[in-house]
Length: 167
Image (cartoon, rainbow, N blue to C red; front, side):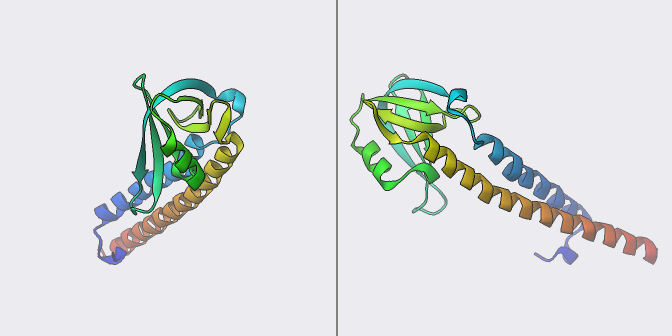
């Protein structure tokens, strides 16, 4: 897309959209995936009904694993936290297995730790670390969106000045 051929209105819309998307990536992801202390988290005990693997845009990317429970509640583990061994262990659990979940306080239903009968399948510290790394990557994308917005806004100002000089 050539910025010079865009109308000023479309260019302004793109700049504003870039600011909004950039803010979601920079601030939203840092909030939803914030480094938290175990004491700030809620611990729940539920019975597993089923698991569902959610794929990303590429069929090979695991976006998350949803845990559906017999009480009607649903929880999820972000794909960056799911190892092959965790996925294999989850897939082998029979319906009705009792799970103890530690949940992120800023993201409804996001699991940071999972254990079955006292056996730790997902470690709290590892999950928090993986989510932090994931947030950093999203922050870089957000900063790039801010840069795009700034370039668009500078071009809008330059085009407006040029139009005034020509008039």
